[in-house]
Amino acid sequence: MKPFASLAARRIRVYPRAQIRYVPPPCPPWPNGSNSWSPLPLMPRYLYRLAILMLLALSATAHASKFMFGEQDSIRMVAPTTLSGPGNTRLFLAHRVTMKAFLLPYTITDNGYVFGISGESKQYINLPTGAELRAIQAGGYLPKPLPPTELSWFDYLMGYSLWIALFAIFVLPWLKKRLLDRA
Image (cartoon, rainbow, N blue to C red):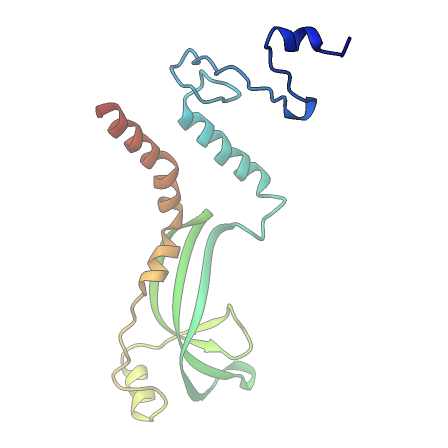
């Protein structure tokens, strides 16, 4: 008698072992009404997001170079000058921008013009005002009038990136849920 002959006689189809697939049964809904799997199904999703932010904050000490904390000035060169500063260093006209941050920047401030020091990325000398500034401009060391200082849209995008991230993490999912509940 051939193996599986009795199965063939009963017209039961026999598949080779390689073709057998296990299909799990559908997942029953969780008590909160969600069909998606999560480790703690009863915990609201915004608490997950808050927990992730807290873990990022706690792990930031190991990765402090990737996140920003406190105030950070950036000096952006606008025009070279023939003026010399302390220690006979070369000065240039610069635009000073300050970002305040906690993990990501949350505000940006335009601080106007300063004298940047060549070779130093974070040091500057405040631009004089009044009669001293007019004398420097009359000597031809600075342009008269000074060009207007303004931040670009990219500066604003980077300067307020914490608020954008919080909006994307908390508000957008809430809005999505509200819109789906209405439908």
